[in-house]
Image (cartoon, rainbow, N blue to C red; front, top):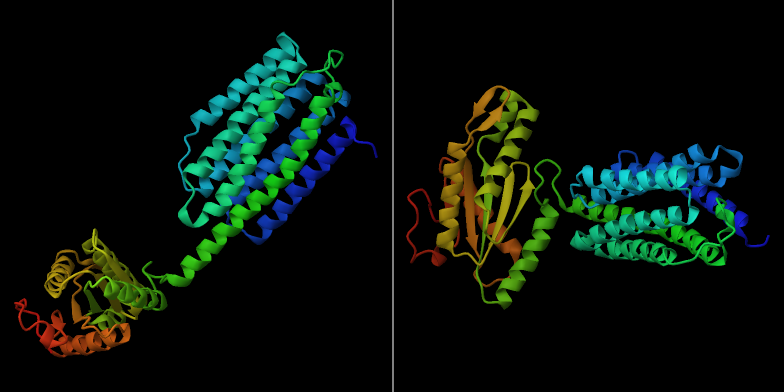
Length: 400
């Protein structure tokens, strides 16, 4: 089969159909992915546009050209919206809609009022340069740190497409082309062939964006407590040990607090486990509010226990923070369907004494927490009394 315009058109059509079908099958597996849905719709719109433009000799010229270009414009906008959604960046509707309306107005003018295929091709090239450049800028400017590889590769593909259409702006159209896009000349033929290859590259770039995003989400889910959104036990222990070793090298202190929701079993027994879950979410929210601006690690240790690692804090600062947490809990009761519920906390505190093992700190804090609960709850107990003998302790802070 010789490579001429009809052949390239057929190859482009088959490629669009194959890519759109592939993304549709992917959408069946990855249901609930709004980004994938946007891109799948855009690919079907591209297929529709290519089909209408290829069938112009067999269809009324004006409706076919207008419908085909409208489908291509909608394809670009859906692709742009999908990228913005992938990057979690708000995209106002009016700028892309204004761009598409201007594009269609120009196509109509140079199709009906002043028919000129060459100018229409230039108008389409300008539109493609703007949309592809816009997408590339979004990918480069707003790429999340953990997804920069896929975003940069995808941006490179979109920039290559923008460059291709920028080159097409300056290519001559064969004088005898008339309204037949198949006779625009060899330079245009070369850009169509390059466009087919770049469309395939864009397909792989979009898949790469999805795959890297899914890997990031899976890693995040593996480290996150599903109920509270905090770090889970494994993540906070691993990160806490790494932070402890780092601080020891920097000759900085580390304080660990083990925090327990008082009478949590009574809450579950009286109002049910959904109410208990709501109390835990409320408790985690209060902790996060109290920790703003502090270098810390916070995670759910298990059940109703939370572990807090304070980097570079002294014991005095940790005691003051624990007192603030308890006051905030008193001021902000949990809002349940049954009404507001007061929540208190018992806290065990331990300071790194140079052992360099988070497990030892956890054991010491656990002993202190047990003592706090035995003393009547709603209080702080500090472990390792030799580290606090020279510091004034709050009235409710009882050293073990």
